[in-house]
Length: 115
Length: 112
Image (cartoon, rainbow over all chains, first blue to last red; front, side):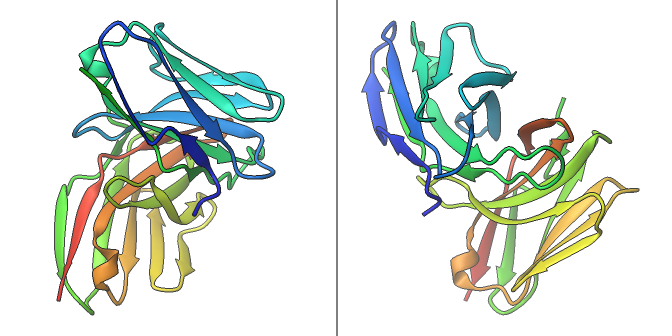
């Protein structure tokens, strides 16, 4: 158990809909990352938040947005869903130390299926 | 542009022997490298890491080697056990950019 929790575990929805994925980081971790793993794809970085502020963005679609709340949990919002958004969405957290050695610990993921 | 590459999609090893998983990278700004293990329907589990100031790091049965001149790292598992069967991902990050860049993964199968 990494200490990172994600809900829900599975989500099935229809095209055009909007969903929210939730992540709680490990105790003491200030940074939250979101990654997407599509079928036969590696993990692709979407976005990073550190202590409530956006720190880095990857190839995140404009239809997707995220936020980190004062209690450090994070939510990833996916809107106007398309079939191609079906994927595993992972949250990771880390202390986000400057310099070497910042290891990210991953949650169990949310499997999103868009029908 | 695939900055981190795992050229072997799969690897099969006999139980008790050594498993060697390889990873190449192209970005010379990467200074921290990690290996994760992933079972189906679970999140990646951190295994071992190495910073660019070292060329070897060992943790029990797992050893990671880094060859900076060749931009190559490898994960050695010895002895291999059936529970090691999983997909292994190599990942890298650059100083000042904490996001991880992942390879495509190698599926390791340990045969009894």
